Length: 281
Image (tube, rainbow, N blue to C red; front, side):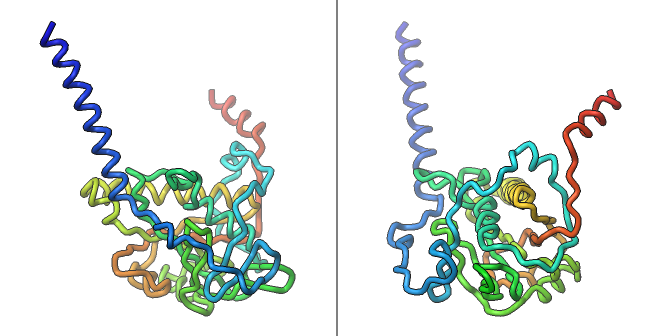
């Protein structure tokens, strides 16, 4: 009886120890923005509507909201890799929703994001390469062409470089024309150390690649819901992409994701899929 009681107590102690350990790892290893760093700069110059604001080199994106009537089943059904785009720009509202869906905050307590991350280590960084007159703010006002970095905590873009660098990015991507022709390209990098310091080599070989895949699918589904087209690109010279976006030495580029208005948008019906399945049964 005493042995059973001792074993029970030991089990409770071990459970508490595991909970404390996991909590401490999460608290002290997951990068978080200190409160002082997320204070919003007072607005001094409004461009477009009150929901889009440019202050210096910071672009305050429209806040996340329900913007489409496409349900998740339809987004999955219609998702395609699209490489041909019209010359039409996209709206800043659509850009904001693409970035939020990619890696934006979805939880106000723990700061969780739109895609799962091993141990909530969040190793990815998100950039946007914007072309000339490629993102409409309002009317004939456009977001300045350049390379921007996405800040998930404030849902803002920080201008890194001015200019249209889609051609440079396309050359880094083996001259894939859709990179140059798309109005914007989302570029995703990884800081592997954020994950490997907890999970070791498994973080680099498995968890980070899984996470960037989750992010890519989120962009696909949101683009589909918005009536846009996209394709994920993994064929490129890493160092050249890093030069274009001015990535830090610790970042490794993993994805280029061009997004634009598709030249052809074919929609499959569920009835067609049902008939296909029944024919194969």
